[in-house]
Image (cartoon, rainbow, N blue to C red; front, side, top):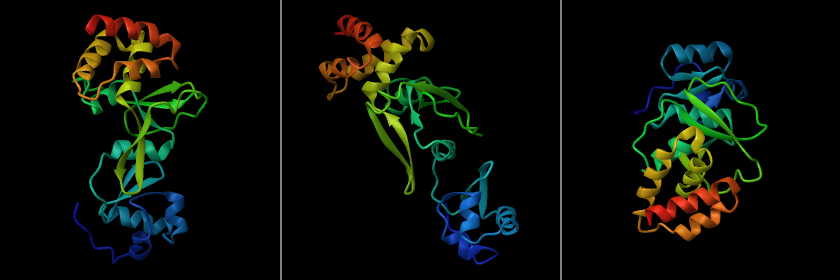
Length: 202
């Protein structure tokens, strides 16, 4: 997105703000509430939901994911959403599948999010980071972890998702069934059915 003229009200303070910023961050940078609304009305910033804004001159990105990442720092793309990111399914979920450690508060978002609560003891296994812009990233489970989660939650996600993802994953040059099963040992409900699925497909 091209640059915009920031010489008007609050422009100097706006230039010191991150691409995505909160109401309190704007106040701390010297942008009054009145000037914040003026910047919005001038089209220099846009609202991403209650108390969260993004500069119009920031680079283009997925604003739904940016909002989700800012609302919950532990937010991690999982299940069908993660499998789609890794090219392991053609399904396009109506809502973004996002995992949080069990016990965490579910934030309110404008973005269409389906929240899932995972065991804190295994939450970090296979978790990587997906950069959204120079200042923001969101968690993303690896292909292997995403398959394991689909297996252990197959009663909700459906077995077809598991088999389709496994078939595609096995065609990859870097696919390692032994490594996949090694990760699955951390998830007792997934190891046996995953091993059985691999025996069918291999």
